[in-house]
Image (tube, rainbow, N blue to C red; front, side):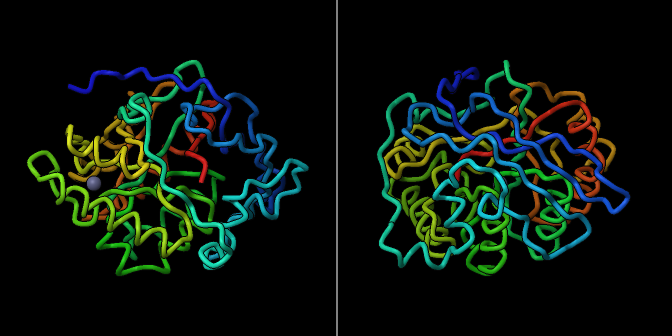
Length: 303
Ligand SMILES: [Zn+2]
């Protein structure tokens, strides 16, 4: 049904992960961003983010925000979205309201993988936020200088707005994963629209940013959901690697699946909500450094 698994993204965009250099025994990490064409634009007019973004990340400081591009020493211009991320509450009052933009047919197709010519991985974290596991995932991402995409469920987000803002403030991408996590395939267009629109509205009110990416629960996009998403300016992201961490197959099974199946351009699916995600957290702790040491750069869409 949805067979286009090799959508390419010709326009420069935003690669934000970096090799890690162990600077000193004090465990300061220097992140050097890679400059290459990015996988996210796809003709949507998103301006290229500064590729020279360099961040100095202090480890072992849970709770401290990752220094974002706003505090970066990079001489490149700070993307407006990154600036907004530092002051999410101001974004909604500054008069700069994000504008919904209906998508083209090409932009409406789900993205299953990124450009395999680039050694990039997109880490996606679904079903949160969750006060037990999201902070642990955020700490790991900060430790390794990784930007990820969080597909948030509206009814979780409304319960934990501070956590939503923390995810955004740390520079991660906030995306729409419906309000109640239903199977969209047999729902009416108005019901689907309500699920998506309500969630986008909440996330915009909470972070100051209108979501631009959507993932259907279970990856089950439908013709109706694709139409509604396009109408709401939401691009559709699926995944390449699914370790089925939600089923709690064991930490080693999650690690093995990710490391066995990952390849350049993979979109990896993990979960920080919807149940006990301690196996996911433990797996991330192991496989993230392995992927970094293998030369993978982590990417997320521009904010
Ligand atoms: Zn989900």
